[in-house]
Length: 353
Image (cartoon, rainbow, N blue to C red; front, side, top):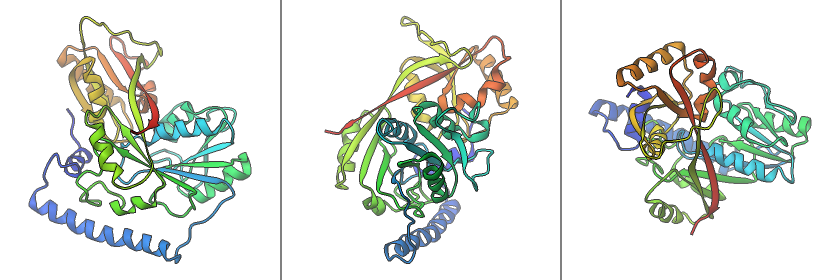
């Protein structure tokens, strides 16, 4: 299994590994200064010294308190598709790690079509949003949510703006805030960056209107639900379940052999890779698990290394995520003798008991 700096810090953030004394001291010092900045910012907004800008549309923020991998994107898609039956909807994403400048507004999808062939240029998450939402939903990227919201309203007559992330960005006035919380990871070690995964203090959860607990196959989901209930906010559960596995190039569904589990190599570049691997363990034998940094841009060298590992394990089948799929297509189209497949998940949002 490959190992990188981000994996290392995630293990610290989620109490799977301890930092050495010197690093721990550095992380705590960093957390101290970060907490001063974030608490001061929130205080200035509470006192109206800093003001949130209002736009002529209903603004919904789907955010999270922690860094990456919570599962906001399926929630955003579900919400956008539901609302678009009655209202014109625009999704605004920051466009993290895209090749487009996010200083200006980028149109990823309008009412007619998706403007990009894959996520290499526009970013993997915005592209996934564009692929999965209905025709009546516009997808834009920009780091300035206010400017993007104004363009959505003026150019596309959007009545509802959905922010994919943006809980910590308070420049735009939100009419409803939905916080997505990972059922397994929750708030990690409970510490702020860089000592922990929290981008905001847990107490800021009070700014939310609703919580969606994202269940990624958690056997202790009721325990997680009971823990989150103590915050006293309305709560729903989003179940993430495997839908199918299909070939990345042909899109043909892969029919599994029910009598014998196939050996595969699983790889991905997502925030919480272990949850992806857990899904696959139920039906496959994982010859190896390979995780790249979140939003990793794959290269020919990466594919060569994957093939090398596969040869050493005598395996010819790979499985990755839909988020990774579009960044791989040009790199694997001429590869013979190996099958690159994709796990598609579906989400079901329901009331929590």
